[in-house]
Image 1: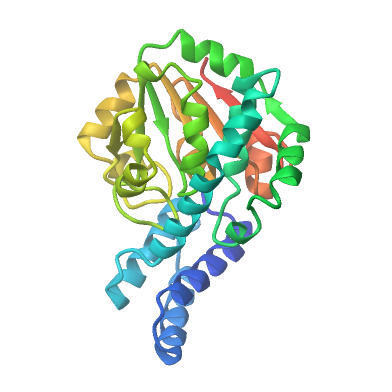
Image 2: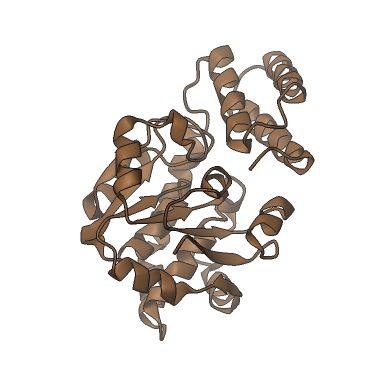
Length: 284
């Protein structure tokens, strides 16, 4: 997907948030933000949104030397999610369809960001779970699980920190012997890296590989040969989040896109309203 006018407010918010997290003096913060805004104004409309986001993060690193401005935020999100895991497991076990219940929690995990972390805790859990069970789910969730059972080589493309903890619940109801999890190769925004996956125990569930890229998505041209080999050999791709959808929506591979629709551009492309939890199958 190419960058659209509707993407610009998100880029500006992302740039402002990242600069704020750097903890640099106000004058330097202002100077850096102005530089990023000029950079955005010169961006090509033909660029992928993930490429524009990657360039923002790269400029921040070049100016500040900070490899991972979101590290503290990611750690907080992971800790919050890990603390809720036992309660979520109990809730899943009480549902008539535990597979779909785990999928729903994984999909709502896709909404976790640096602002959401303060609103989800043990006190808000009952309301959260009611929302999870009652929310509409677009697509065929049973087709996902049936296809996974018949697949021999599944590549699971992870998305964000925090969310990756909720993904554990989904991974546990998939045929784990066939699953390899892929994460970002370098820190970018709040996306999950190998270090994050290791901290939350994903590496104990399934093999984890890095895609080698610092883009908040899967730009195959930027990925390592190892990742591309896994990608091509997989007979099923399970892709989490908007960034992966934006960069892989035209892939030839058999793929399920799992995401909660967050913006009108994605809503139009995927055919579901904003806010909808979606299981979008392609090339089956």
